[in-house]
Every structure is written in C-alpha cells, then in structure tokens.
Image 1 (cartoon, rainbow, N blue to C red):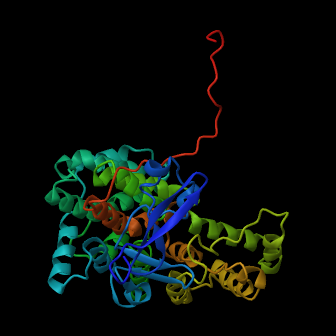
Image 2 (image 1 turned 90 degrees about the vertical axis):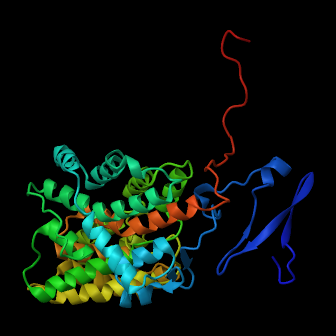
Image 3 (image 1 turned 60 degrees about the horizontal axis):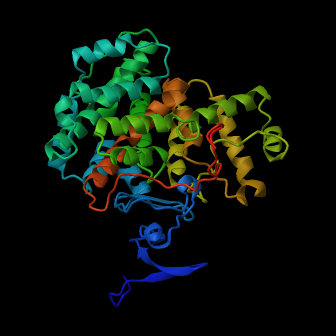
Length: 431
C-alpha cells in the first residue's frame, strides 16, 4: 500500500497485452512484485533457476542485508545476541517471536533437560545402525523415526502436539548426535545429565570429558554456544526452504526437519567448513606457501577455489565471521602448541583482504572460515561438522515450519517449469 492507502502496482507489458502486478513492501529490504495471478491472467510464468529472485513467502523471523553485512533474528542484531544472549534464549526467540522472561527461559530449559533421554528402543536402533555411516545420514534417519516413537505429536493442526514435538526435537537432537558420534568411535554412549545446561550436556555426552583444564573447557562451552547462535537461522537458505516445502504438504515437523537435514548435507550447503580445513591442509602441504596458493586461485585455468570466502547473500563481511575469529584466537592461544592451520588461516585472510582481486569481487571471510578450526580444536572430526551445523539450525527450521503452519496465505509448494523437451511425436507403428 502507498501512504494514501491505495494499492501500489506496476504494469507488466508483453506482446499481446499487459497485466498489473501489486508491489509489496516489507518492513526492511527488498520490495516484491506479487505474481500469483500471472499465469491465470496471462498464460505465462516466470523463470528463476535457483529461486534467487523469488520470494516464496512473507516471514517475520530473520532479516538479512547482504550488501551491508546485516543479520538480525526477530529484529535483534546478531552481534548483540552473540555478545549477550545464550543459544536457548535464541531458540525461544526464533520459535516464539519474543525474548523469554526469566521464568519462561527457566521453564523452557527444564523441559529440554527432562526430555533429553531417548526411548530404550530408539537407543537400540541407533546402536544397530552402521557405525561407519556418515553421521548426517544417521541423524536424518533418527529424526524421521521420532515420528514413530512419538506418534501422538505428529498432527500439524494440533497446537499442543506441535508444542510437544518442538520440545522433543530440541531436547533429543543433541542426544542423538552425541550417540552417533560415540558409536562411530566405538565408545559407550554417555547418558544425558539433567543437572547440566544444554550445551555443556551435549559436549559431555559427546566427549565424556573435555580437556580437563577448567578455563579452556569453559571456553569450549562458550564457543559451542556461540557457534550454535550464529547458525540458528539464515532466512530462506536451501535447507530452510526444504523444510518449508515439505511442511507445505502438511507433513509433520519430524519429517520436515529430516528433509532439512538431508538438504544441509549437500556439499554446496553445509560442508563448507570441512572444505576450509581441507584447503588449509593443502596449503600446509605446499610448505605453507600462501602466495602460491592464492596465485592458483586467481589462475583462470586452475580449478582451485578459495573456500570460506564469499557468500550467496553477503557482499560484505559476513557479520557472523567477526564473532568467531576472536573466539578462535582465544581458544587456540591456550593450547600447548601453536595451531598451524589457524596460523595459515590468519595469513590467508590477511593476504586475500589486501588483494583487490578478492575485494573487488566482494569475497570476504564467511562464518565457515574459522568455525572448522574451532571444531577441530575441540576434538570434533570433520564428519561431525555438518551435524553441529544442524544442531544450530534446528530452531530456525522449527520456527519457519511453525510460521508457515499459521500463515493463511500458505499453499502446498508446486513450482512451475518451462518445458523445453520434444514436441508431440508418434510412437513407432502408431502413426
């Protein structure tokens, strides 16, 4: 609407006619041409591979300005949440829309603690799965199976069941992830401890014990909490869009989140921090020759890529990367021996940011550039990196699924296509 209350429109002109398109404006950011009447009115559709220019919904959850390097959850800047909030508080904010009062946060935390244990039959099932299977494959399977163990929480039309499913997913995903990891290294699983907070409990279930040095262990808990906050939501990314698409069919929350986990598992989406470590290992094998590696990246004939730089959305510094770099420095400074890969990462960042080849292309460090270095310092193998991403992204997936559930404009997702195959032809002998 315009300031005088009249609908704003633009005129689409094409050979043979024209059609008015409403022009919608959000709270901040892009404006949108509403094209939902286009096919019926004109017989034409839009073509947008990858949906890079298509808004599939209206959302109140996360705002991103890629040019300015802005990320906000429910209006709160990520830098402020990273400095003053906790992952559980951010979970509550994303899912319920407002920061919790102290009593609400306490009750939320207690609900998660009380529901962290897995049913005995599910523990048996997880222990029977192939121990050499990728943790993301096992995680997606386990989440899907929760619908069978808690069949009375699968009705998307029942608000009480949705609330219960929300708590069960948030409470049990860390327990599932930790058990998958323990099985993969042939160590006995560690049961959840209701006396511990969410992040500390996950780390204990995963490692049993951390370094044994109290201050360093506190840093690990702080780092894990921060990384989960920074990954908690990121608007309509591939996995979140997948959760919404699956949920649009009125699939339950478990099946929708399981689909999101599988989308996140794709190497173009959730595997970037692992790729950064592999890149740093490659540079180490070049005797730490950062200049030679950068030259290979800039060589148009080479297929070498600078991993951890640039982003589909951000054309400036990823606001999440600033928070992580300082914490990585703090953790690695406490280790007995210098971390060679971290030192290479610092040198690589300095070289790239001083090179107009990268800055002109707006290739700045993103959230994945330092997160893998931190996970490695904590003791996680690279196969668990995407699982940790999923743990962080879970509240965002839940928030989007719940928002869509209550959206009166929501419809089952059914994209159109532009057919470019053969025209009608006759089967041999049927002419």
